[in-house]
Length: 469
Image 1 (cartoon, one colour):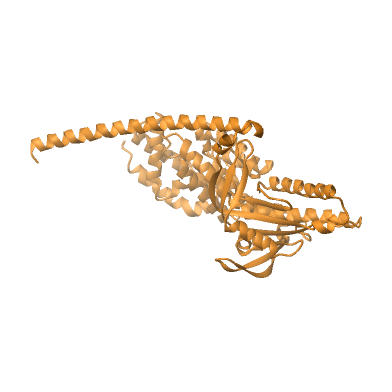
Image 2: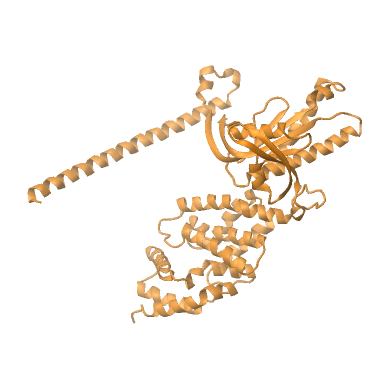
């Protein structure tokens, strides 16, 4: 290439770079304007939502548009409350409405308890859905627990009415799990409507069931059969899907039930398994926050390290033969043990306990469990000095990399992290510190020793060979 062509090429590249920069600035300006307009629009919609309906024009009402969102896994419960005619024969209309209101009011309290969303319904039908508007992996279990509680409530209410020779409502419930499209409108008080085959199948489950029974689809059954006793109830033809198997939901399995004979109340074993299942949702939430909010200089204490410690806590925990609740506590402590870096580098363990106390009550952890999790987080503070089996597992999980083949590249990320904060000198100084730390360190669990101790000794010799005297 001639010198003249090279100069033309350089000038062309410079022009393109300038043009690209100008376009980037324009995009930023448009984005800023759009952001301001969106804020103004949200503010106006909030004002409209707060006004009495009679003051809102049709045009303004139409401007507050409903929004739609698709959920790949939601569980819909459809309850068909029956018996209006036979009750009307012995009761006045106002009494019937009062009775129905009483039932709906109690159903609403159950739905709220299990963090399920009530869906718009008409007359004596009742619909709610789990996994909407916030997706979660536990929604089939949540809805089934709610259905059992609704059923139990009506059994007791019916017995009370029959003791007075009064007729009472009958109930048929259907449950199905699958994808739905949710339309939601309003600001201060949001209302939801669901569309899709999942809603239709839930109503089919109710109509194909029997009075006082909870009829669930094969999809829901497969997701809850670990915890509940179900009886096969044949098949029903479903449009575009062929014959679909159904099951009557009977009770919580005796092993997971506090009232073993009745099976309506879950015991602690059940809730430990439930929380382990729910951990997936909590982990996704916290890891997303770590990825977005952790400082850029955290090359070692980042979300990848957190995932590593969670996996090792489970591995070593099972290796040490601990129970499900202990695995839950270990994995949760591992999830939060470095989360405090969002707040500050020093004393990050303490800050991590603060975040754990903020989030865990919302995920049904007991006060005792939260306290034990905080103790496990604090056990990772250096130098490690565990006081229990679980604290030993936690410490070995946090420093598992010391005895792995990838020790050098992992430790180099820690050096880079400390170097950027002016907390360490040269790489040679770092290697000397590493040898000293590794020589004093010990794995506390037998599983940790078996997996990592030999390789850790090899790493010591490897680093010694890198040190320049």
